[in-house]
View 1 (cartoon, rainbow, N blue to C red):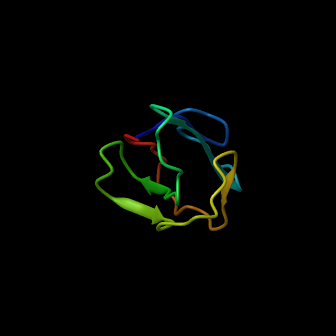
View 2 (view 1 turned 180 degrees about the horizontal axis):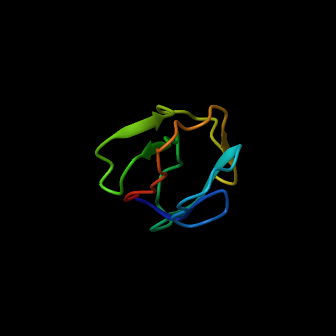
View 3 (view 1 turned 90 degrees about the horizontal axis):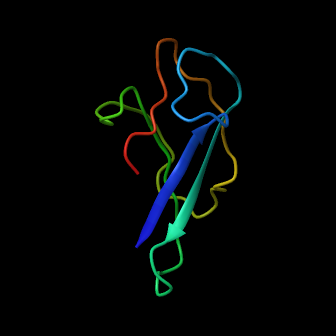
Amino acid sequence: MIIIRNMRTNHVENPLGFDQKPVTFSWVADAVNSDAEKVLYTRVQVSENPAMENIVFDTGDRPDLDSLCFRRTMPFSPGHGISGGQP
């Protein structure tokens, strides 16, 4: 099993109220035990709320995402917040 922690947007945990471009995402993935499988793909979803009820951006499953800095190339629509939700 893999645990996701330290999710950040533009190097800030739970950012609110600013418009900074480009938007970058980062996270740390930790294996719970030494028998953990290799991560084959990563998926980044952005929602308007922490419950992840209204997804406004979804990368889909991708093997090429870098956990140190994934840059979103398209701007968010006005009024859309950024929420990390639950890993």
